[in-house]
Image 1: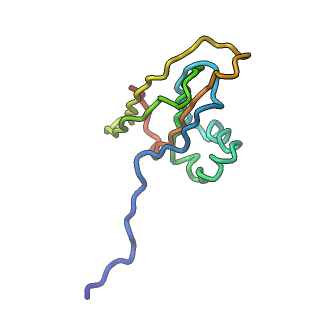
Image 2: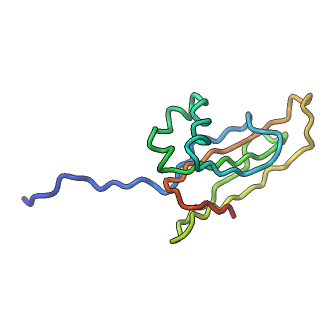
Image 3: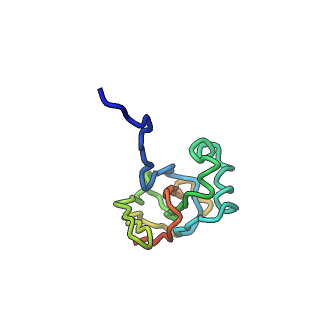
Length: 128
């Protein structure tokens, strides 16, 4: 038998999809990068996200909100196709096939899907 250091060098994945919701987002389509601790702390107001975000994540990670805007589709069609790390940035490739509809707040069939992504890096984020 050989001796080992006893440490297991498990590394974090580059990214994690924290949540994909079919409703509850904003009424416009946008992608937002949250990198400052004050911005990230607003995510802790969500009961589900609070369980998935550690205090150290506010200084070690960046979060991306992908909001699909209004739609009548039943499922969220924003997909993360890949995330690549370059020496200078993190590239997030997004496939967005969400069929948008005009905003009609009185239409009960309108949904507002969104996805929240955690990037385990503080490099600048570029969405492609």
